[in-house]
Length: 150
Figure 1: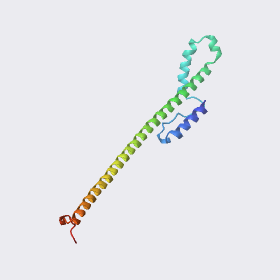
Figure 2 (figure 1 turned 180 degrees about the vertical axis):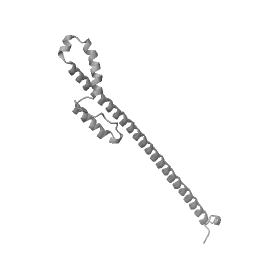
Figure 3 (figure 1 turned 45 degrees about the horizontal axis):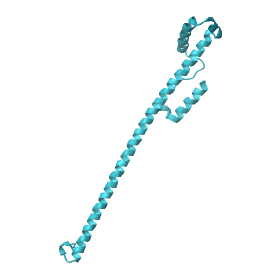
Figure 4 (figure 1 turned 45 degrees about the vertical axis):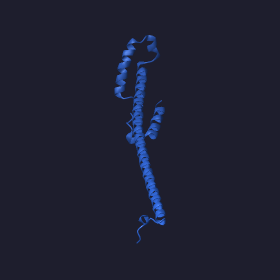
């Protein structure tokens, strides 16, 4: 069971985000912590007192305490992984929002540039049309439309 948890933990850290951004996972140990044993001992003592003799004969108190400790360790790993996943989702959402803002800025800048190019083209076309009209009038004899000579 621990190897499976370590595999998923390791792959989620590699794929999801850099190590520095990850919350620390509890360290895997072969023996549970004294706090875990104390909590399980207290819990099992209460359960043991209310168990039928036939159920008590199936497993020892120590086995129940070990099972409880394993379950608490698994729950601890699950909570740590959930924190990592939540952190990864927040980080990804922030990166997506940043990228979307950059794309929107790029598109706005591009649209502004395209509008400026269009305006310059329109201004040039208008000036050229006016020049052609003035040149035609000049050739027709209207000297006021002629370009000044150098």
